[in-house]
Length: 427
Image 1 (tube, rainbow, N blue to C red):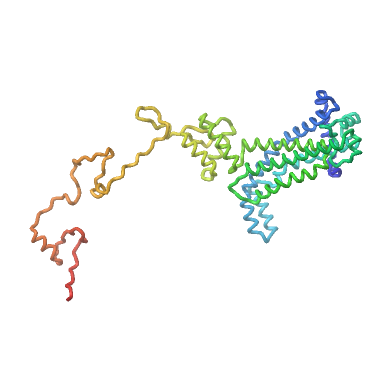
Image 2: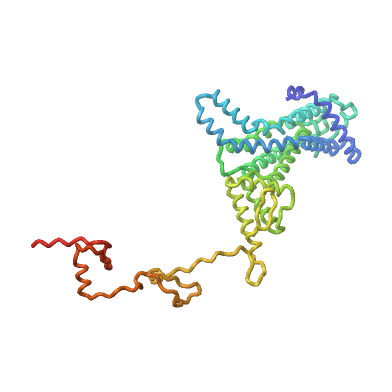
């Protein structure tokens, strides 16, 4: 660890200078030799670094979501070229280039703050060994060695011997209790942060290997912090615990206000947004407009939660526009009742009443009012046309002569046209 920290010695001077400036402020409030002054200086260093890393954190979120979207395509490439690793890597790089994603973007915040972490470790290790480092002179060195956080010196470790701890004017029990509690809190905060990401902010509609990797990291990272934490000084544990708490709060804010599409967090967010929009009749701020605009632009590609949101607005008489605004639906605005007052919902289409079998056979439709009235217009049915009356004998002769040139009318139950003569029965 000392070798790694020495590699980042180029940033040791800026880190020590920032700590000294914060120590000057807090030392005037709590005293220069107190653990509060030095501990809050380290906490302020973390906050300053994380504020500067917010743009990288935004890139991390976008890269993580882009990687989740590409997981199905990546799985296809792995199955197609499973016997050709070189072609597989070429297709992967081609996919990253076409989509504009970078797998390393999800690790940017950790990689960016690692130099500050090792530089702080180098500074605290110099304080423990009694060496001036960076802008920390002899006077500040003695002040830092006197500083205790809950009875544990700032530069003490869990693995330090009793003699070394006594040289820092502390007891071994206090050092191990404080460091053990901080290691547990550090691991628990890391586990909760990763679990929150997996249970709330992951698209549950797509099962990909990326989700399995994240689930594995949820258990691996806390174990790593617990193993390496026993070799960290108390000041470094304060740094890492603070950055974990910051990450947890930052992620909670993102999940609450900008969740991943298709996740449980998006379902909860759209439910809250639906209540706000239906109550106020419009989107309230730029963020809500951006969410509605993105949902409208998806069209048929909306997920279940987004379709439910759009359908809910429609039922409430509202329509989401392409620019993210929400307006009153025209169908509801035009609908009015008989007395001229606007109705509360869209007009319902009246379904025609079902006719009885007798009405369908007779060809007459029953009026909507329910009462039948005799029709005054003459019927155009074929049975009502006047026909010349013929004697019964002549009619019988006409039908019994199959070879006659005149075409007789078909009786009920017979085909039209000349009928085929019946063949005489054979006895």
